[in-house]
Image (cartoon, rainbow, N blue to C red; front, side, top):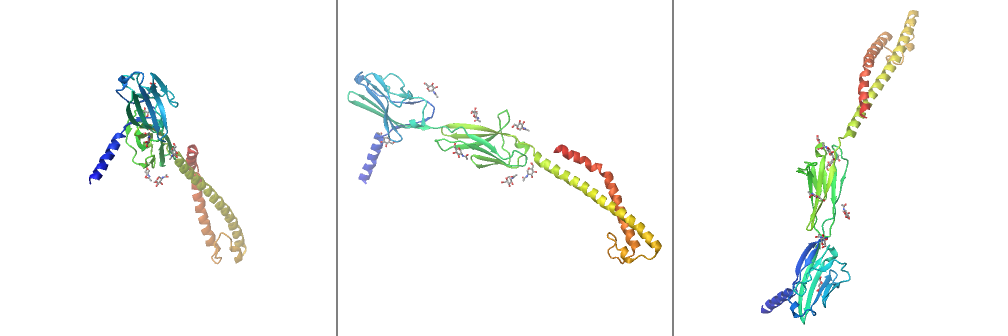
Length: 334
Ligand SMILES: *[C@@H]1O[C@H](CO)[C@@H](O)[C@H](O)[C@H]1NC(C)=O
Ligand SMILES: *[C@@H]1O[C@H](CO)[C@@H](O)[C@H](O)[C@H]1NC(C)=O
Ligand SMILES: *[C@@H]1O[C@H](CO)[C@@H](O)[C@H](O)[C@H]1NC(C)=O
Ligand SMILES: *[C@@H]1O[C@H](CO)[C@@H](O)[C@H](O)[C@H]1NC(C)=O
Ligand SMILES: *[C@@H]1O[C@H](CO)[C@@H](O)[C@H](O)[C@H]1NC(C)=O
Ligand SMILES: *[C@@H]1O[C@H](CO)[C@@H](O)[C@H](O)[C@H]1NC(C)=O
Ligand SMILES: *[C@@H]1O[C@H](CO)[C@@H](O)[C@H](O)[C@H]1NC(C)=O
């Protein structure tokens, strides 16, 4: 048991010795890495300061140094790494990194040396990256009764990324409730089903991570479903035209028949005046097909039906301008 306790304490000691402070900062920002010491009084010329960088691939480099009263910049410093002050002897070895980049993430070691005395300060720097400008789009027909999907896509090295959807009132920038038919399919996709004119408006996608947020606005302009109305009009129109054509055809056929019948009747009358009509003559297409019935009843019944048909036709033909009117309507709509 004591050995376990000892090793536990030893572990704590080791951890304590290698402890470093952690700094989280956001890309593009400026950050200061503090380093204070009390070694300046040991000698002005012998004070030596080094900032070493141990990157994520454990590649080491000197970022900036101070030696013999001179400041030296590291090879890859590009002017972004500077001492925050010139109070080196007063004990300030803090550096300032401007326009932080993701590749700046890693372990920084501030090493101060003077007259055989050392001071170390380790700082672990984490660089957070804001989400990228989201790419947003609306897919689907923006017509009444249709479904649309709103897409929002952003990326960042810093995860997790959260998506939030809001509906905004035009111009006033106020948040208004989502349509009832709006559903979040995945955090990046919002669907609105069975579009109505009331769904018209601006939809905002807000992308957030630990480093910050970005947004994009989608304008949904719902159009009345004119295609549906037009289609319906075309169908109605077609049906009316068809009906009129059918009526005309029927009328023509019946008229032809009537004329034929009249001629036939006249012919029959002539025959009857002569003598007995041959039976075969009576069987005529259009009249009773049985042939055994009396020609008179057959012809009269045919006559009456043709008369009624032609009468109904006449009433239809007088109505003809009426169906013509909606046709103009239809054409206007198309
Ligand atoms: C960072 O520092 C530079 C130079 O000191 C300055 O021009 C820039 O505005 C600073 N950026 C931020 C985000 O503070
Ligand atoms: C460099 O960093 C790695 C981890 O990032 C660590 O294991 C290694 O000990 C560091 N090297 C020094 C000299 O601090
Ligand atoms: C809209 O989506 C719903 C549910 O997925 C589906 O039942 C419906 O048919 C879709 N409507 C159209 C016009 O695509
Ligand atoms: C989102 O954007 C990233 C690149 O920025 C791309 O790789 C990915 O395919 C996109 N996802 C969708 C759903 O569009
Ligand atoms: C679509 O909405 C209309 C009213 O806007 C409604 O009459 C119709 O029933 C809805 N259709 C479906 C499939 O929900
Ligand atoms: C959306 O982003 C713009 C800048 O890109 C900002 O001015 C605006 O306040 C943001 N809107 C919301 C609701 O976060
Ligand atoms: C629908 O949205 C458009 C902009 O996308 C706007 O000009 C129009 O006024 C809106 N219509 C209604 C009825 O809100």
